[in-house]
Image 1 (cartoon, one colour):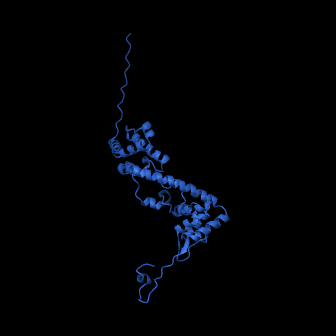
Image 2 (cartoon, helix red, strand yellow):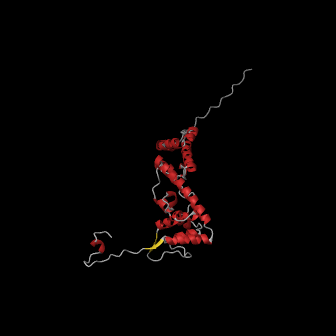
Image 3 (tube, helix red, strand yellow):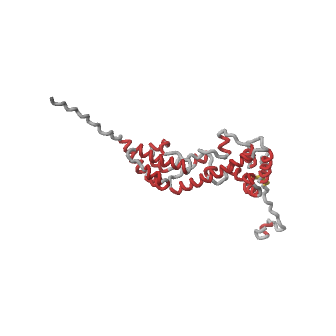
Length: 270
């Protein structure tokens, strides 16, 4: 008896991506070459292990996201590429520029914290009031008329102190936005008004260095505010803040018998 031959089921050919997906895939490849180069330069071990998967736009985007996630975890806060809705409409600018998480860690910048409803401590309110911002009526460090606040005078006064009290100037600059470190000084308004940085080696190294410095400053300031927890310490802080306030008197030009100011009579030198 002859056995019946079983019919082999014909395998279906793999589905081809739609035209839109294919074009998007090509644009990701075309505009993401610098991402691949940066991935290999900054994370060579991970790049060697995982590489770049070009098989589909999804796998390629996942590779780009892996790079951004490494930057976020090891260097500074940044969103990955797929979280940017504009990527699917304009891949080139979305791949060229970083989407920073500027306020992904807590800072002491009072302007943003107060607007967000975060608690502002007594010492922080004292610093803000001493600097001339009239928003805390319960603080008696307000600047009188024609007086000014000098960060330089505060720094000079703090240099003469020892221990935690010497950190008051750094804490004041963190609260007022004068540290010189972008992660600490930029408000949310500054962030939204500024052009996003480009994905480049120089920008990555700059932002990574700034973020490292921001974390160091934040730790030092955090320790200072934890220390400033008693009325006696608050009084010492108030004394230093008052030393940074000074009256801004305009210079008076002394007139001579010739009718010319004294400074002109002496040849411009006093």
